[in-house]
Image: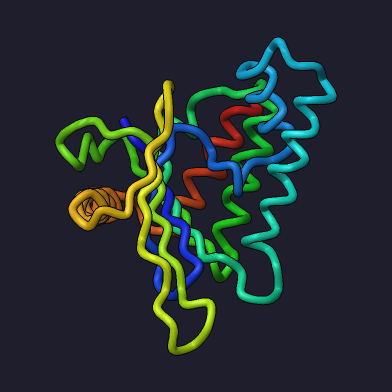
Length: 194
Protein backbone atom coordinates (compact mmCIF):
# COMPACT_ATOMS: atom_id res chain seq x y z
CA UNK A 1 0.00 0.00 0.00
CA UNK A 2 1.16 3.53 -0.48
CA UNK A 3 0.50 7.05 0.59
CA UNK A 4 1.28 10.10 -1.44
CA UNK A 5 2.67 13.59 -0.80
CA UNK A 6 3.67 16.22 -3.30
CA UNK A 7 5.76 19.15 -2.18
CA UNK A 8 6.01 22.19 -4.40
CA UNK A 9 7.66 25.55 -4.06
CA UNK A 10 6.28 26.72 -7.38
CA UNK A 11 2.80 26.87 -8.77
CA UNK A 12 0.47 23.90 -8.94
CA UNK A 13 0.88 20.98 -6.52
CA UNK A 14 2.07 17.46 -7.26
CA UNK A 15 1.26 14.57 -4.88
CA UNK A 16 3.62 12.44 -2.78
CA UNK A 17 3.03 9.13 -1.07
CA UNK A 18 3.75 8.02 2.50
CA UNK A 19 2.81 5.30 5.01
CA UNK A 20 3.27 7.65 7.94
CA UNK A 21 2.17 11.21 8.45
CA UNK A 22 4.81 13.30 6.63
CA UNK A 23 7.17 15.23 8.90
CA UNK A 24 5.84 18.58 7.68
CA UNK A 25 2.42 17.66 9.11
CA UNK A 26 3.36 15.74 12.26
CA UNK A 27 2.46 16.88 15.74
CA UNK A 28 5.26 16.89 18.31
CA UNK A 29 3.72 13.94 20.15
CA UNK A 30 3.46 11.84 16.98
CA UNK A 31 7.06 12.73 16.02
CA UNK A 32 8.28 11.81 19.53
CA UNK A 33 6.51 8.45 19.39
CA UNK A 34 8.16 7.65 16.06
CA UNK A 35 11.57 8.80 17.32
CA UNK A 36 11.36 6.52 20.37
CA UNK A 37 10.75 3.50 18.14
CA UNK A 38 13.17 4.46 15.34
CA UNK A 39 16.11 5.34 17.62
CA UNK A 40 15.71 3.56 20.96
CA UNK A 41 19.46 3.74 21.62
CA UNK A 42 19.50 7.55 21.42
CA UNK A 43 19.22 9.68 24.51
CA UNK A 44 15.99 11.54 25.12
CA UNK A 45 17.90 14.75 24.42
CA UNK A 46 19.04 13.52 20.99
CA UNK A 47 15.53 12.44 20.04
CA UNK A 48 14.06 15.72 21.25
CA UNK A 49 16.58 17.67 19.17
CA UNK A 50 15.43 15.80 16.04
CA UNK A 51 11.76 16.37 16.92
CA UNK A 52 12.35 20.10 17.36
CA UNK A 53 14.23 20.27 14.05
CA UNK A 54 11.23 18.62 12.37
CA UNK A 55 8.90 21.15 14.00
CA UNK A 56 11.04 24.08 12.77
CA UNK A 57 10.93 22.70 9.21
CA UNK A 58 7.16 23.03 9.30
CA UNK A 59 7.66 26.77 8.87
CA UNK A 60 8.05 25.97 5.16
CA UNK A 61 4.30 25.57 4.91
CA UNK A 62 3.20 28.08 7.56
CA UNK A 63 5.43 31.05 6.74
CA UNK A 64 3.68 34.19 5.50
CA UNK A 65 5.91 34.84 2.52
CA UNK A 66 5.74 32.24 -0.24
CA UNK A 67 4.81 29.19 1.80
CA UNK A 68 5.60 25.87 0.15
CA UNK A 69 2.62 24.19 -1.42
CA UNK A 70 2.01 20.71 -0.18
CA UNK A 71 -0.19 18.16 -1.90
CA UNK A 72 -0.55 15.04 0.24
CA UNK A 73 -2.40 11.79 -0.31
CA UNK A 74 -2.37 9.50 2.72
CA UNK A 75 -3.41 5.88 2.50
CA UNK A 76 -6.23 5.10 4.90
CA UNK A 77 -3.79 2.82 6.74
CA UNK A 78 -2.19 5.98 8.17
CA UNK A 79 -5.46 6.85 9.89
CA UNK A 80 -5.92 3.36 11.32
CA UNK A 81 -2.35 2.54 12.42
CA UNK A 82 -1.84 3.66 16.02
CA UNK A 83 1.34 5.61 16.67
CA UNK A 84 1.96 6.78 20.24
CA UNK A 85 -1.41 5.64 21.55
CA UNK A 86 -5.03 6.63 20.93
CA UNK A 87 -4.75 10.18 22.33
CA UNK A 88 -1.69 10.95 20.18
CA UNK A 89 -3.45 9.59 17.08
CA UNK A 90 -6.64 11.55 17.75
CA UNK A 91 -4.63 14.79 18.09
CA UNK A 92 -2.59 13.97 14.97
CA UNK A 93 -5.65 13.27 12.84
CA UNK A 94 -7.36 16.48 13.95
CA UNK A 95 -4.15 18.36 13.16
CA UNK A 96 -4.18 16.86 9.65
CA UNK A 97 -7.81 17.84 9.13
CA UNK A 98 -7.01 21.40 10.23
CA UNK A 99 -3.86 21.57 8.06
CA UNK A 100 -5.99 20.56 5.08
CA UNK A 101 -7.85 23.87 5.38
CA UNK A 102 -4.68 25.92 4.75
CA UNK A 103 -4.75 27.52 1.28
CA UNK A 104 -1.36 26.01 0.36
CA UNK A 105 -2.06 22.48 1.65
CA UNK A 106 -4.11 19.97 -0.27
CA UNK A 107 -4.68 16.82 1.77
CA UNK A 108 -6.64 13.78 0.64
CA UNK A 109 -7.07 10.19 1.77
CA UNK A 110 -6.77 7.14 -0.44
CA UNK A 111 -9.51 4.89 1.00
CA UNK A 112 -9.20 1.13 1.39
CA UNK A 113 -11.99 0.83 -1.17
CA UNK A 114 -9.71 2.29 -3.87
CA UNK A 115 -7.59 -0.85 -3.88
CA UNK A 116 -4.12 -0.43 -5.40
CA UNK A 117 -4.58 2.29 -8.06
CA UNK A 118 -1.11 1.89 -9.56
CA UNK A 119 -1.47 -1.90 -9.88
CA UNK A 120 1.71 -2.58 -7.94
CA UNK A 121 3.22 -1.59 -4.65
CA UNK A 122 5.36 1.51 -4.57
CA UNK A 123 6.87 2.97 -1.44
CA UNK A 124 6.65 6.47 -0.06
CA UNK A 125 7.84 9.18 -2.44
CA UNK A 126 7.91 12.92 -2.87
CA UNK A 127 7.93 14.89 -6.10
CA UNK A 128 9.62 18.23 -5.56
CA UNK A 129 9.00 20.98 -8.10
CA UNK A 130 10.67 24.34 -7.75
CA UNK A 131 9.90 27.77 -9.08
CA UNK A 132 12.71 29.93 -10.40
CA UNK A 133 14.55 31.76 -7.61
CA UNK A 134 14.93 34.75 -9.90
CA UNK A 135 12.48 35.74 -12.63
CA UNK A 136 13.83 34.92 -16.05
CA UNK A 137 16.09 32.14 -14.76
CA UNK A 138 15.17 28.49 -15.15
CA UNK A 139 13.82 26.62 -12.15
CA UNK A 140 15.64 23.67 -10.67
CA UNK A 141 14.65 20.39 -12.29
CA UNK A 142 11.82 18.35 -10.78
CA UNK A 143 13.19 15.76 -8.36
CA UNK A 144 11.70 12.51 -7.09
CA UNK A 145 12.68 11.42 -3.62
CA UNK A 146 11.77 7.85 -2.68
CA UNK A 147 12.33 6.33 0.74
CA UNK A 148 12.94 2.76 1.70
CA UNK A 149 14.24 0.94 4.74
CA UNK A 150 17.87 0.66 3.60
CA UNK A 151 18.35 3.93 1.76
CA UNK A 152 16.84 6.79 -0.13
CA UNK A 153 16.79 7.64 -3.82
CA UNK A 154 16.84 11.08 -5.42
CA UNK A 155 16.41 11.35 -9.18
CA UNK A 156 15.86 14.09 -11.70
CA UNK A 157 15.99 11.69 -14.65
CA UNK A 158 13.04 12.53 -16.87
CA UNK A 159 11.91 8.90 -17.31
CA UNK A 160 11.92 8.18 -13.58
CA UNK A 161 10.20 11.46 -12.72
CA UNK A 162 7.53 10.78 -15.37
CA UNK A 163 6.74 7.32 -13.93
CA UNK A 164 6.20 8.82 -10.49
CA UNK A 165 4.09 11.66 -11.91
CA UNK A 166 1.91 9.05 -13.65
CA UNK A 167 1.60 7.10 -10.37
CA UNK A 168 0.60 10.35 -8.65
CA UNK A 169 -2.13 10.98 -11.19
CA UNK A 170 -3.58 7.50 -10.63
CA UNK A 171 -3.47 7.87 -6.84
CA UNK A 172 -5.02 11.33 -6.92
CA UNK A 173 -7.90 10.17 -9.11
CA UNK A 174 -8.63 7.29 -6.71
CA UNK A 175 -8.48 9.49 -3.58
CA UNK A 176 -11.34 11.12 -1.74
CA UNK A 177 -11.89 14.82 -2.29
CA UNK A 178 -10.57 17.25 0.32
CA UNK A 179 -13.84 17.71 2.23
CA UNK A 180 -14.54 13.96 2.38
CA UNK A 181 -10.94 13.40 3.47
CA UNK A 182 -11.26 15.91 6.34
CA UNK A 183 -14.50 14.26 7.42
CA UNK A 184 -12.83 10.84 7.42
CA UNK A 185 -9.87 12.22 9.41
CA UNK A 186 -12.20 13.65 12.07
CA UNK A 187 -14.23 10.43 12.21
CA UNK A 188 -11.06 8.38 12.64
CA UNK A 189 -9.88 10.78 15.40
CA UNK A 190 -13.14 10.15 17.31
CA UNK A 191 -12.69 6.39 16.85
CA UNK A 192 -9.20 6.56 18.39
CA UNK A 193 -10.65 8.31 21.42
CA UNK A 194 -13.15 5.53 22.18
